[in-house]
Image 1 (cartoon, rainbow, N blue to C red):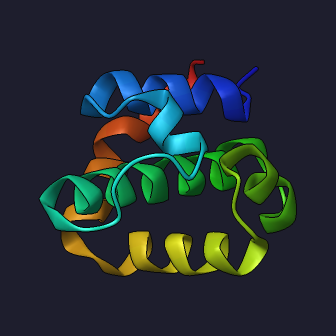
Image 2 (image 1 turned 120 degrees about the horizontal axis):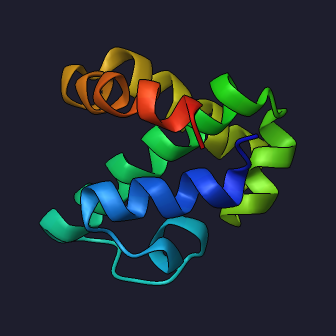
Length: 97
């Protein structure tokens, strides 16, 4: 069965963003790399919510974020075409974790 940790590792592998950057506040906060990390993290949060059924608060603990940040990331993932495409590309395989 999938878990937040497995999803974080899977998204990190698929996007080339380190799992430590997805699950902590490490790394830079500006520039193209920060946007890349944000998008991968938002997709990982959304996959965790949709596959594992975790609450935003529980997801936040896995990503070192608060629940409002999770809500915003999930909302953005659903509305941003690029993030939505990445989510769709990864969803089926993530179900098998």
